Image 1 (spheres, helix red, strand yellow):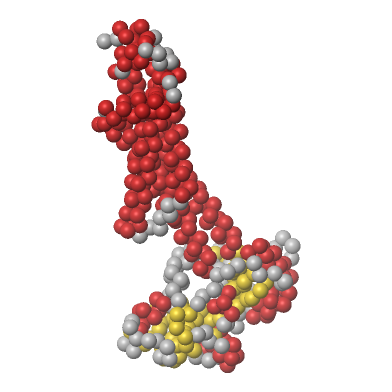
Image 2 (cartoon, helix red, strand yellow; image 1 turned 135 degrees about the horizontal axis):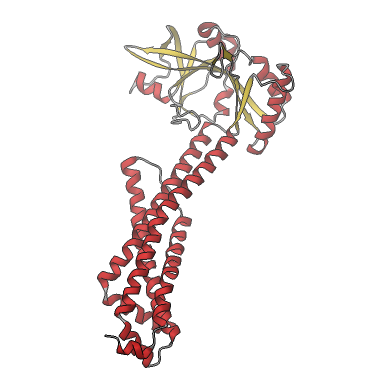
Length: 406
């Protein structure tokens, strides 16, 4: 008997028992839908973290002043005065893999405009900082190197500060008071959102010339951090090694001694986030796959019941010329068809569930074609694997005994 005829017989057999076929597919529908939705959640989270890391800057390295222990208490990073402006200039001069660098110092600030006030983070830096962070302006522009040299009272504000202080008012050219000092707003940064590294709001910030911060607000003559941009992602690792070697030499740190600074490579963070995302996606997919396997077991059980109920039908088919192979292929095709139809409905269900998750919970969900193809292949494999035993059992029935079956 040709394959097309066997397929037609299998489809007619499924159509005769619509309710049973639907209930049999239910496990596959739930399983495939769960896999699609869970993989979508995992891949969406992975993509979102990668986007947040990319938004922090291009080929970015963060050089921070080291930690220190005082009186048995471990102080946070930046507690030492180990970084100075000359360190940044030496990095630019002596590290070939470094493209740009900007110094930085940080303070807290109470900002006032009119009757509104806002507590925010105050960073002192230089104009190169905005290029290193690939941070565009939605209004205005950066302060200039001339502003840095003169210690001018000019400020660039983040989107969170703009919303909380100005509302619908255009902030450009307005004067704000930062720790009771007047500053003219010259630029407003485009929003970047939450930092993937620190989990803080990157837009809740005011940036001013570093000389202004050091001389008029903090009184510090050292740096809390240096932001560095490597020539490329590949060269960022060479830049990291060059910076580490240079600063150890400049700070006279002997072999075996701990560094009084640290260098963080954003490429490492991106790789770690990517690995964590893949593990989470695999874990979610594995959990969801359990329901798919349960659905396959359901198909096997129903097919075994079907073989028992259709024993006489099988005997008649064998008596009029059907071979064991014909019978086995018929029942195997029935199992595969159930799995494929259930898989197709499950894909629709999983995609819909993913968009529902996005709308209700605000989570990023990514439905990839690879996940859909994998779900289809997996559902077909489930049909073949769990349908083989019932199909084999049907094919091995003795025709005479089958005809006598009541």
